[in-house]
Length: 369
Ligand code: COS
Image (cartoon, rainbow, N blue to C red):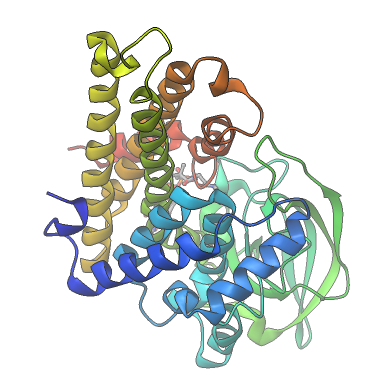
């Protein structure tokens, strides 16, 4: 049975998959030579085609987000990145924003404004509760000082949802989220960061960034829980992106191993190769089940454990699948620019961002009785 026919999904998800698949076949991949331009153009084109509508709103359809990310990642991981950031970057506005703050969604869903999520700092990665960037009240303003790093769309973004310490209590209970326009005076790109699968990424400095009082998202002191809630919605979608890449690697490997060889027969004639293909297919289906289960559960209510399981399993499994794909492709597998070589680089960061694999293990372990 086609995975889209599984009972977690509804007909609107199947229609989305078909429409987006047709769009991807026509429009992707794009030229990645100028990353910023490519990401802006991808957001625009996805927005014009209506696919960014699902990235924001009073409720988020996580199954739709997963179907979209899986489809996009299959065709072009940079397109998946451009899509996903519109959702992650505005997640706090969708879930906790005021109607006025949510006006930004009109622009991000149209692809006219680029969004980013700014949590990580040089001294605060996995330990997200140790955020040191400060936000203090000064008359009718908030004033923000500090540094954020590994910020996807950093420098490119028109708006950031950013976590800062407001100090209501020590640790996680003293953080708040803010809506920071990309052109706010005092917000600067300190460094553009290059990665093994490049996408717009930066370290940012905030020097006395002055924001109006209504830049606060939700309640003061609730920022950590809000950021975790955003991640609960988006971690299954990271699993979905990994799944799309794993499916692509499997498809490439099925085609490669079916090619006639000069010596006769095909690679797939060998039982040992069939065994590897079986393991890849099993990893893909197990990931699909966990991703769909997590998205379905999140669409019904809080599903922290399911989200962690989906992200952990799907990203680790995709790494295995893609590694086997490279291996079975032989020399072609490491040729720079081959599909499986670029997938090998693309998939790696997914085991790190939005909560590294060991953080997902921690979340799962804490949920056990
Ligand atoms: N949803 C809502 N609230 C949550 C939550 C969730 N998913 N997870 C935790 N909370 C709440 C807890 O209930 C607790 O509330 P109380 O103070 O009222 O009891 C509070 O938040 C603090 O939780 P906890 O003590 O579990 O926090 P920790 O500091 O131990 O951190 C982990 C928990 C490690 C899971 C968290 O820091 C994390 O996810 N780190 C990874 C960060 C990350 O993904 N970064 C990537 C950024 S995007 S690239």
